Image 1 (cartoon, rainbow, N blue to C red):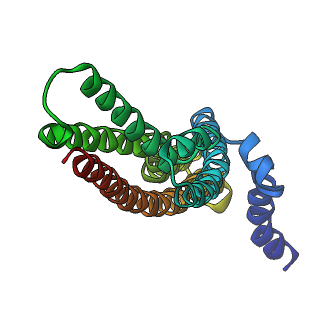
Image 2: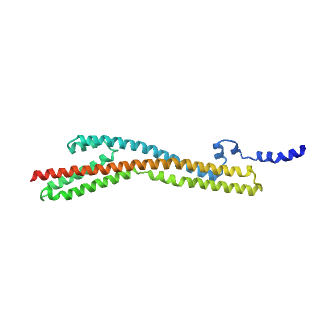
Image 3: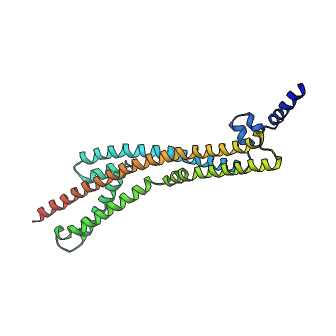
Length: 256
């Protein structure tokens, strides 16, 4: 009877002794005892994750300044009755897209006034369509440039969110391949044989998801913030054009 019991538990003892060292510890030991390919995948995912978190924090401070300065600039814009005074105040709002749109439109207006003053052509009323067209294009170009500035580096978040799971999946597939290779070498399909490769596969998948999920959430959040700012830029450009048009009309009435 003792022989039967010993024969029954000897294979289990052997299998337990063959368990990889990494399986007896924490996640860090799993990483240390993983293969070179899986380690490379994990290092790549960690670097992508660190890069994405850096971009997320950087964009957080940028967008906070954008909304804060835009609100302050709008107060200055509507409180001042002279565009020149608003232009001087706008120099203090370097992060505000609305301030940049105003600066571009105001500079184009000043160029048009200077050109009209040095020209021998007729009064403002004949050149009003040309002046409004150039100012409108200046506002549109400034809006496009500001939107591109706000979208800078967000493509990294989108790329990480879409590719990190597949990079982790590559580590998963490699770990499973290694598990089957160990089965073929040892000629046995027990837990001690397949567990190391499966553990490597799971840890690579976990790192892929850990890198992708925050990147996707942050990308969608900042994209929504950009949509809000873009809508504000369009509304402000329309209001600014109306003010300039009324400015031309006042000059026209003075000349009549």
